[in-house]
Image (tube, rainbow, N blue to C red):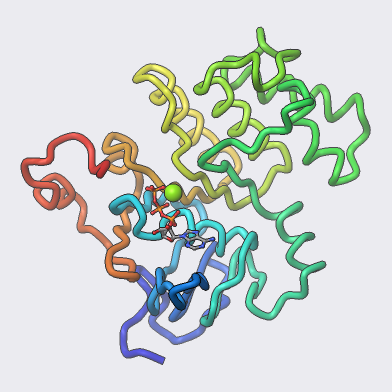
Amino acid sequence: MSDERPVGGPTDGGIATNAYAVVAREVFKSYPTPEGDLPILMGLDLAVRRGEIVAITGESGVGKSTLLHLLGGLDRATSGQIVVDGVQLDTCSEIELARFRNRQIGFVFQFHHLLPDFTAEENVMVPCLVGGMKLEQAARLARGLLEQVELGGRLHHRPAELSGGEQQRVAVARALANNASVILADEPSGNLDYRHSGRLHDLIWRLVAEREATFIIATHDRALAARAHREIRLEDGLARELPRGAAASYLGDRGGSDKS
Ligand SMILES: Nc1ncnc2c1ncn2[C@@H]1O[C@H](COP(=O)(O)OP(=O)(O)OP(=O)(O)O)[C@@H](O)[C@H]1O
Ligand SMILES: [Mg+2]
């Protein structure tokens, strides 16, 4: 175990404390390639308290989506410990991971992954039905969530009949449908214009206040990163907390976006 504590993490060495939505310790992740293993995360430490909104930033290809997939139980770390919402993922069976994903995590994918043959309403209903909710109740919940993301007028459109930003907002509504306490969002405002990304940010802040949800958001959106409680920057396979107000000077003359 390294001398370094997780970013913003507990100082007592305990990893599964209730105050933390996420604790990751010495996480390594490599992808096997024909040329050999490609290391992406190299001993990453991270801790996020419940009710926090954390922006994960860093250049394209640095491993933001990779990290979110590990935290969401969608992929496994090569080594290291990850505890999310009290569940130690690295010791879970596949069945336990599936249950964890269904019940405890809301995930907004970078590229939506909406079901193409299902309407917006049905896409949002899926996590509720998987969780055992009755059809009519799931439909009511889905309609309410779609209204919250201003898509009450697009309930019966399939993904191909929605704009990119509308698809992204359906994906956000779907991620909220299972009432998860930890929501992992990968570029949730990537396709949204200024007004809609502002509305989405307002929704995130409202949910944190109402549900005490925790949001971990991978983003290139400087406005979102600046508004988040914390900004954690990925670099060289590690996570580094940016002191508040430091992002602007870190970015130097690259200005309003760190897209690369
Ligand atoms: N299944 C895979 N096999 C091999 N390499 C992969 C795989 N998935 C991702 N990678 C590589 O891992 C690196 C990190 O990818 P990741 O998608 O996590 O980046 P990111 O920080 O989310 O980037 P972006 O800002 O563009 O979304 C990239 O260089 C990518 O090519
Ligand atoms: Mg990504």
